Image 1 (cartoon, rainbow, N blue to C red):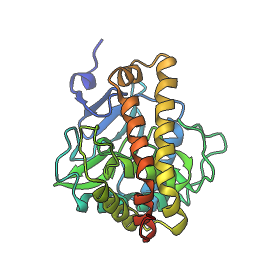
Image 2: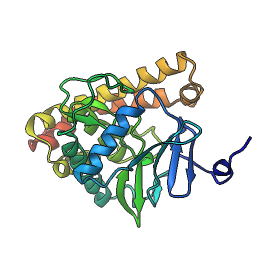
Image 3: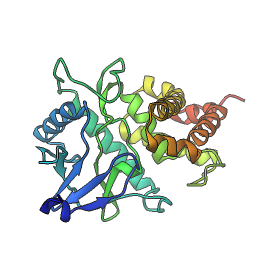
Length: 269
């Protein structure tokens, strides 16, 4: 039987893995073993004064998690020039730094479960998937991150690497979403690191971290597809894994240029 709430549901589009709906001022999403830990994290963020994330409101009668609906919209492909602007890149990096800093004082429960395993050093709680499709924009400005399912303790640079890949973006010319000259990618990567206030060690390690993050993403896609996930199997069928491998090779080819901008020294000839 369809409940009154289900009759009022509006299906929300996003990353293509979960079925997410809006009911009034709330969002309803499927739960996992990690949902309790994520709700504790979201409660902590609210108490810490970080407003760039939804609040959690428990579960509904259908067993789905209930979260705030944040007004605005996520970015979809093809991404607009405004989403790809320097102003957006700077704002996302600042918001990510504020988010990470707010998680430093969060102590997960001893038996907390996470979607991804804890990654050492566990400096912060990584969001795990900072990207335009998980960022809410209002009046053209990024105002919040959503979809914290992949949150897990880990190093700052692990989260930063994925966000930089998505927002710079660090893509090969074969990637049709947006192709920038390598020098422009390097400039924007430096801007992102500056806005985040990345330390010297992180600047040296960032290019390698992006490659490692993409390799991890490909492995995860195949593991999930092999386990029966139709969503991830669809991503592989669409060639997403090949695209990520191509982008990783592009980053490796130009690592000297990227790192030179990050550490403020000219590339070796």
